[in-house]
Image (cartoon, rainbow, N blue to C red; front, top):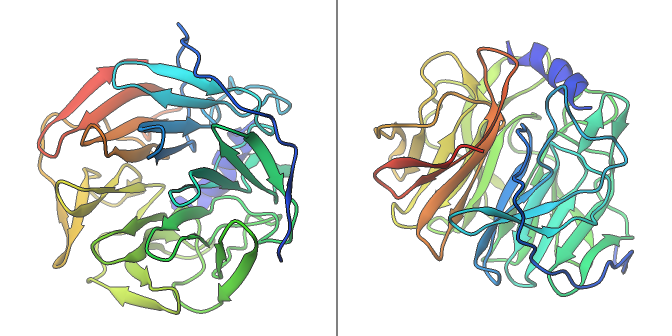
Amino acid sequence: MASNLVAALTAIIVGTAGCSDSAGPTTIQQSSAAPAASAGHNLVYADDLEMVLLTNAGLGGANAPAASARTRIWGWTGAEWRVIDSAGPPVRNLAGVAYDTRRHMLVMHGGTYDLGRSYGETWEWARQTGWRQFTGAGPGVRDHTQLAFDAERSRAVLFGGSGTDPNIAFGDTWEFDGARWERVATTGPAARVHHAMQYDPGLKRVVVFGGFTPGGADLGDSWAWDGTRWTSIAPSITPRTHARMAYHRRLNALLVAGGFGLSSLGVITRRDAGWTSLASSPEPSARYLTDVAYDAKRDVLVLFGGGDPAGNSLYADTWEFDGTTWRRVRER
C-alpha cells in the first residue's frame, strides 16, 4: 500500500560556504489564528526558546496555500500556538528539519510542494537573525527525507528520501555542521522514504526506523548511526511507514507515533530490549505524517496534526503526553 501512496500524497501537496538572505531578528506574535490542518509538517524543540516549534503547517490537503506563500514558524506555549516568524522561504513539506542545540539554529533541507516542485537548498533560522540560506554544496534536491541533530557530535544527520524521480529512493547519509555538508556513508539501511528518525541520547546514536523503498516492501527494521557506520539494532517488527519519532526523557525511550502499517498503529516505544506497544488511553486517533517533539521544559511530548488514513481529512489538533496519559489540549 505504501508504495502507491508516495505519488498520491505528493500530488496532493499543492563544501564550506556562507549563508545569504538574512531576514533579521523576529518577535513572537500573539495570534488568534492557529496552524492549519496539515500532514508532512515538522516539529522540533528549541532549547534556547524553551518552546516546541512547528514549521510548514497547512500542506497535505486540497486547501494548501499558494506555492509562493512563505514558511511560517509557530511556537507552542503549552496553551496556544503563536507565530514566531512568517518570512521564511517558500512553503514546503516532507523536508528534513532539525534543531541544532549547539548553535541554537533550526536547520531545514529540501522538501516538496507538488510533483513538479521539490527543493534542494538548505535554510537556517535563529531568533536573533531570522532565515538565511546556506550557499554551499549539499545533498541537493531531496524530499520525503529525515534530519536529526546528533548532540554528542554536534552534527545534523540526513538520511534517505527521494529526488526528482519519486520512484527512486536514496540510501546515503549526509552530515551538516553549519559550515559544510559532507556525504559520510553510502551503505547501511536500505534506501527508503517515509521513515522515522531521531537522536537517542541514551544510545548517543541517531536511530532510523521503518519506511519503505518505492516498488518494494514496507519496512520494520531499526538502525543506529554512530558517526562512522550504521548498525542494525533490535529485531524487526511489524512494518510501519509515514510515522514520526521523538525521544521522551522521563521514559528514557524513543516513541513512534502514527503512520501506515499492517496492524494497530498505536504508539510504540523503544528501549534496550527493542520495540513494544505503549498502552495508554485515550490516544490520538490514527493518523499519518503527524509529527511529535519532546518539550524538555514542560516534560511532555507534543503531537500536532496529520492525515486521517480512513479518508481525505487532515487534523489540526494538538495533543500532549506526560509519559502516562495523552491529553488533547487544543482542537485546532
